[in-house]
Image 1: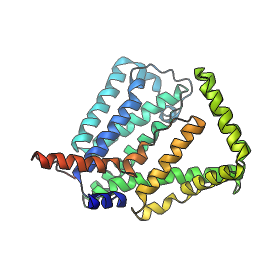
Image 2: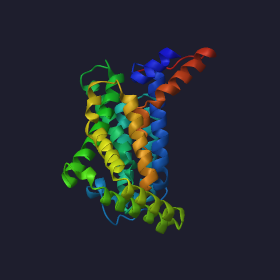
Image 3: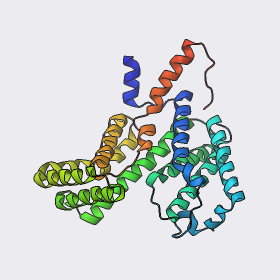
Image 4: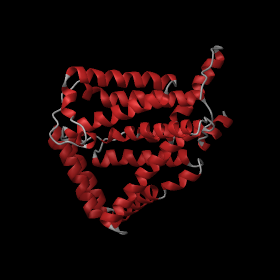
Length: 296
């Protein structure tokens, strides 16, 4: 148990078929939940966004074309989970994901879950890179590391965005942050009619105004976490702890600002929940003497 705990804290991505299988399975389940509804809707392309700026997305409301999109996505999922024809599978999943979320954006519905598209794209680049060099050596690490690079770039750009809009002292503008928090809570009230939002709006607003030092410190620490995340590109050590800190940050944002965002990328590639599941998977297979998974 001590050895397993040490391996988890070090976040070691070794050539473990169990871990990779659980990573793919959880990713697919999350993606299907995110995509499911849009597949059965008929979105009006009122504000073309993303790939809908390049292709006529209105045509996807035609039943045959919509069915074809769903079919290709399901074929991609099967290949992806079976670790077969991975470049084809990831091409299908990347295109389907980008198109699906572009349809939703073009219908005026914002949804930041499209980060999952970049995960598929990063994995596609990893498999394409190894296919081009005719080698599978260290593929198990590259397909994780490419995603980690995308995640780090995402948070680092968020930190730069704060600096470009608010300057070095943006975190000291706690009054503006208090207004944004109250605005978010009031929007929740106007959307749902739940009076609890009014209570939270006043509670959080008053706390921020009454405790400026704590607020500034929290904002500064959050910004430093985003800005310094690139250090994880050079070492797996600390990735688990860093990942949990970022998850707590997202939970705090949800609690205070009612911005619902599931950081699935952190659960899968930083705190490495699939690694925990792979331990249980391996234990059960060994216990009942079941044939183990194979493959890269």
